[in-house]
Image 1 (cartoon, rainbow, N blue to C red):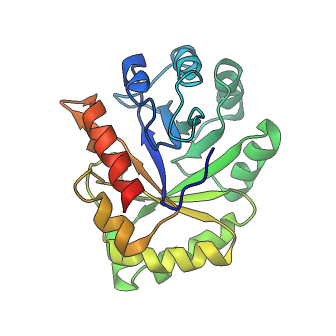
Image 2 (cartoon, rainbow, N blue to C red):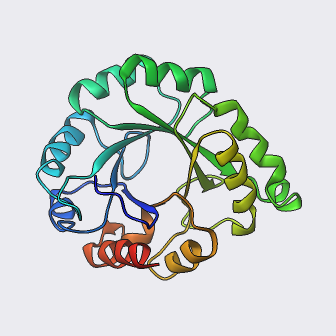
Length: 228
């Protein structure tokens, strides 16, 4: 995909073909399919059909988005079954998966692996993130990307962004990319990007209206990030 100077954009929780078709030409790098229990959960077969549609929709730069599967404590059998139906580019882990398990996924299935880590407000805030950022050392060489999210995930709430620099320093030291999620919207995206310049941003509920993906909000978010 054509590299941009701006942070990478991931739109998560895609469920409808119309959402994908409406993203044609937008500066979006990744789309996310949720396989964990959620109101956005898909079966592998549903995701496979959406993946086929996505492969025909060029984003900015002329290429389709890369696909990310979101899992919580999956078994290797579940991953194998899912990947047989939908050729994901990335497996994103949101549970208690260990670094060793994360590494095994990448080696066994030849996919990129991302690890979501929750920001625990008190511990991270007390140390401006320095305490929590120590966790990243364990994932060196096991994953490509750390995704910071509000504890609980899918809450639609931001965490304290002043912890981000400590995580950025740790990520850089260990050869990891750092993405930020949690409570992002088209209205606060430029503030995050200009203040902290994460490697990427991940949004789901912030581009929905009444629980459904809103293509106008997706466009506003992606373009806001690209221009910040």
